[in-house]
Length: 492
Image 1 (tube, one colour):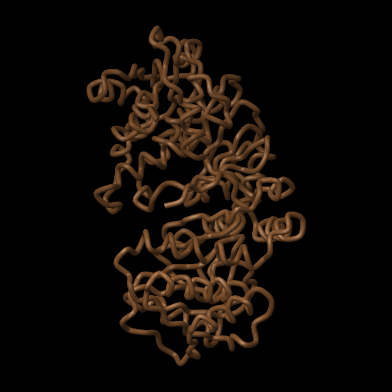
Image 2 (cartoon, rainbow, N blue to C red):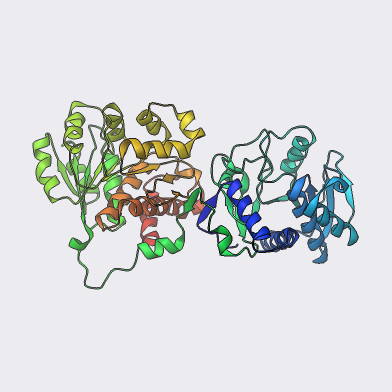
């Protein structure tokens, strides 16, 4: 598979990059289309090595043109290729018309769509509609999408699966479910947001030889936290290091009956490399936690006064796991809310914050969509429908760094586009995952990372640990499964 770039763009931005390459750099549009087709054939052959009978389904515009190039080049490779068209190819314009004419000149034959696909095809190529789709897929196009989705063959989508909105990832009525999407010129936000990840399958990228200067004025919508950034941020430790070099994390939480959350958070901080980790929890839990994980310094506290000496020793506070909404929790909240140490807030700490909103520059908040809705006085559906805006609103209202959890977790940035995590899996939708994330981010803060770096790298480490732990299956994944996987992730 190709290496994915860091920047993720809106459809309009990719279109502008494309235009710059053609108009300013003098690269003919049909040259770019031919390169796209060649890249798609190469990626498809690598991903579907046993597929020797391809059916290309072409619709309108340049997406259809890409499909005709794929058909011609695949046939040149000795693949048995058939083409079905939903739009009369003689009605195509520009580069798409050239692509069809070259396919026809090579002996290619196009069959009009008659409601069904070749049942013997072992790869179906989606060249129906491109990334500029702005209205629902209907009529014969919807029927063609249904036929592709019900076919037993593998599915390759060109640029973006038909029916997925290029900016939001929303399904526009009906959408192709691809096994592999080869996207061109720039990564589209819709591949990673909303329903996009469920429909895109594996993603391969082809830059098509577009010079870097064509991207100079194109503003990215998001940035990926890639492996190179992980390696640079999590550099090897010097041989003379000692535990005092890596900070002291204090986890505050674990109200009556909820010891598991602070235990998970504390161990995640240890596994991520914090030098020392203390827990300030309800007295009924302290001895139990020490018995199960003696490396954690667990303290039972009845009052804020008992918290003070623990705070004095701490470099970073992880606040909220299992906190609850009791009077005990209210007293702790009142004290921590005024503390100036770097901190990571999650769970009921966020619910208390929603009751008494205040901004704080040295804090990282990590809400899931429901918590974000409470913090913004909104509802979960609105947050999910506008995740970028919700992230910006959280950062503006509460200061510091905001992490909006979910599929495609977002991390706010003061220096450019927000960070978007492209790792992780549905198995991570299970109890305690947020507690582990809080511990990871707190440990990175304690080791000297800036808040934005700690949040972005922490989110990615958490997601990659989840992917590693899910290698035997996503269903049944639990939060503690990530703890052993973390060591390999934070030592790249």
